[in-house]
Length: 348
Image 1 (cartoon, rainbow, N blue to C red):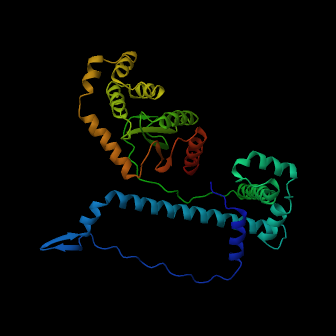
Image 2: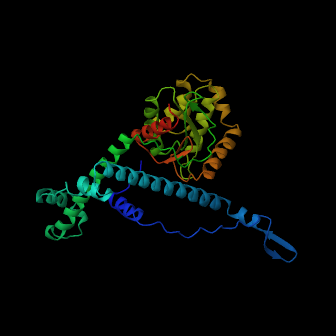
Image 3: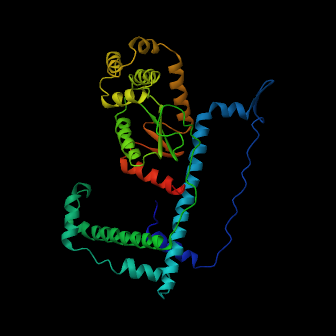
C-alpha cells in the first residue's frame, strides 16, 4: 500500500494548517454527440462515430488510463490524509504542538549523520554509478541520502504503528476493470477471488508467473479461482499451436495437465511433442489429432486476444485480480498480497 514520504506529509500538514481557499472549479467538459457531423465530402457526411471507429483501440486505452490515473490519485490522496489525521491526533495526545513537532521528535532528531564507514561502503558498492566522482565529492550527498532513507523508514514505521493502533480500514475501492472470467479454470466457481491470466505458452515470463501464481493460490485453499485466457504474441510462432494443444487436451478433460507440461518445457513446442504429451496423459490420440483442424480453436484464441486488448493488455503475462490489473512476471509474494487484500476487503 502506498505510504506518503514524510516530506510530502509535512507539506500537506502545513497546507492544512492554513485557512482553506476556494479552488478553481473543474469545468464540465462537453462530450459531442456521436451522430454529429465531423466533415462533409460532397453530399456525404462523416460523423464523429466514423472518426471514433478509426481509433477505437486508442480511445479505449486512453479512457482506461484516465480512469486508472484518477483511482491512483485518489488512493494517494487518501493515504496522505489518513497519515495527516493520525499524526495530528497522536501529537495532540502527547501534548505536542502539532504533527510537525511529532515528526521532528520521532523521525528527524533520532537520525544521526551516518558514520564515514557506512558512507564509504555505499560509495564502494555504487562506484560504477558515480560518474567518476571522488569519494570526497560524493560523501556529503551520500550521507544525506542515507539519512533520508533512515528518516523515511522511521516515518513509515510511525504511520504504520498509528494505523494499527487506530484500526484504520480503507474502504475506497481500487481501480478495477470488467473482466470476463471465461475459459479453463482452477479453483471453485464461487471462490471470493478470481484471477484472470492472459498469457502466451512460448513466453518464459508467463511460465515463471504461472508457477508463482499456483504457489500463491495454494496458500488460500478454496478461496482462489484462476482462469487462463490465451494471448499469443505475434513473434512467438509456436504459441498458437501450443494453445490449440491445450484446448484439445481440454476437450478430453485434461486442459491443465497439458497446460503445465507446455509451460514446463517451452523449447519443445512442436507437433511431435504435443502428440507425446497427449499419449502420456492417456488421451484418445485420434480425437486429439482431429481436434487440431477445428477452426473454433483459432476463433476462441482470437476472442481471448480481443478481450485482452480491450482491457489494455499489450504484453504477457497480464493478470486481473477480481478485475484489478497486475502485469508482468510477478513473484509469489505479489500474488499473495493481492489475494490477501481482496479477502480482507470481502471480510473473508
